[in-house]
Image 1 (cartoon, each protein chain N blue to C red):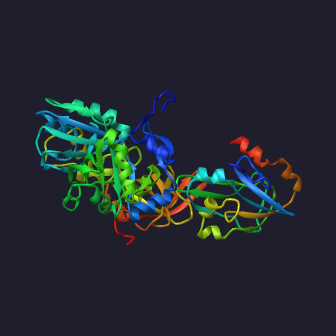
Image 2 (cartoon, helix red, strand yellow; image 1 turned 180 degrees about the vertical axis):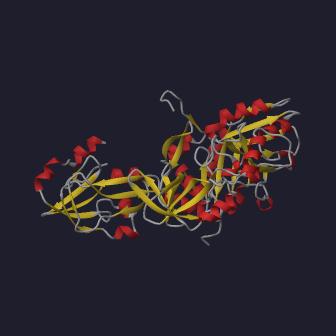
Image 3 (tube, chains in turn purple, cyan; image 1 turned 30 degrees about the horizontal axis):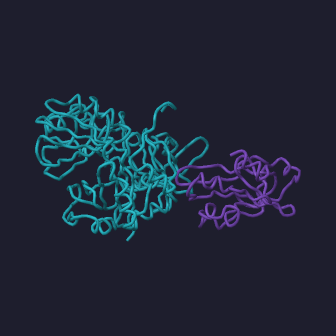
Length: 124
Length: 375
């Protein structure tokens, strides 16, 4: 399965799409598939400052639970409130409607430590 | 389980692979856990009908002049009362009344010389030994490898099955079974199940299993895996061996004393069960409904007013209720009857704790779901 090349990835299965100094963060199609039916996404509050590698939320599927790890440091500017009513969007469209948070990056150089789509695929 | 252990495959294994099921190891077998989605499979069973491969469950046959007396000594219910074509839920106990397994006992003929049993896959070998220890003038055969077993479950189960069989399903009441033809295969059809819905469990020869499965699929049943089965049985609050019931849990801990007959003769564990039940159970199986958007899982600690009261035995998401649900064992220090202990807790707040995660919950009545609740 190809992983979109315009995104950056973590080994913990998050992706980030950067436009200017704002990054949109979600989980990969592989992670969504492994979790199975996602029923709750525990979202952080906008305004929260999160350091790279720290947890910022939790995903519950029918069969298991997973923490969400922030790929970069910054301040959360927006959360995908639509997931409160339709968490299945993460399964159905993980790189689109299933995005989880937007973050204002505090250090663009952290992006260099993230994985390309091909490199992420190599970790699986 | 060790890695050298050879996993067994049911007669339907290749059909599951063809259908793209996700396969997992379960109780020593390679079983389908889901096909497309647990939620979709659950919805099919609550709203129409689904099929499950339950061929991994142990199918045992006891025959000979001493068959009835042998089974009667092994299990807790009074199987002498079974009529031809009737089955009953029962337990196998250890000498000190721990629940070694739960099972169904079937009387094909109503005669004393023939009974069949369906037991949990994980316990089949242990059960064979326990039953053998109770036998005199009887023979015990394990028919698991030569047969397939498919559960057809859901409100439309009867309508889907009727055109495929010569059996009069309308007259086949709960816990009754009959032998007939289904989709051209010779089959035993019982009105039993583990989902909280109406439905049937169908046993056929191993080589006919795929034909029967495909015919039920063609009739509109949705292929369902163990994942959906676990959610469905939890909503219906059916215990699962190794979780709600095990060697350290006695019948009166889980409301199962009613499956232990006081009218029959002796059975393994009877004296210990009756003494324990008379003194009152030391723990109690209860239901919890999560009040936050989290799910308490097995082994979460259950706290009430800050104090540890027990542990979650199974937890999942209930699509019917739209929240996390769990079954749990809680302490019963005053040894109250289970109904009283449940009534005392009902409506009270609890917290289910796993590591640093605390999930708030409420004690609720069981089951979480009753047939027809959605309609």
